[in-house]
Image (cartoon, rainbow, N blue to C red; front, side, top):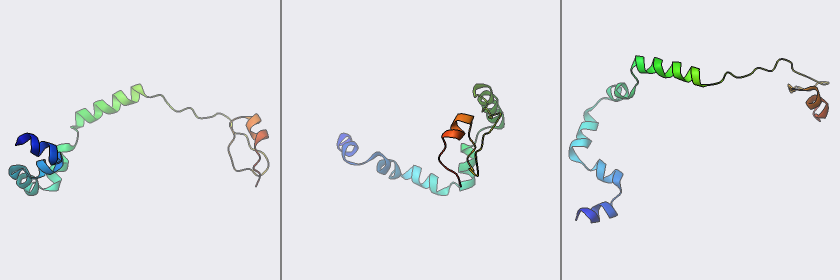
Length: 87
């Protein structure tokens, strides 16, 4: 019987039908559910430090080239010369 119920009924429906789980979820306030899912402040700080060490800083282009009345910031003089937009 257990095999047939697993094969025919989706897992989410079987989990929702469990009497203890549904009553427990219904009685737990939303604020408490959110608090359980949040990271601990130390874990959050550790994650921030490791992420900052492992990610590269974005390079800001030193010079920007324009031509005419074009509003696009070109990265090179050649790109500005090839551009066909001029407003």
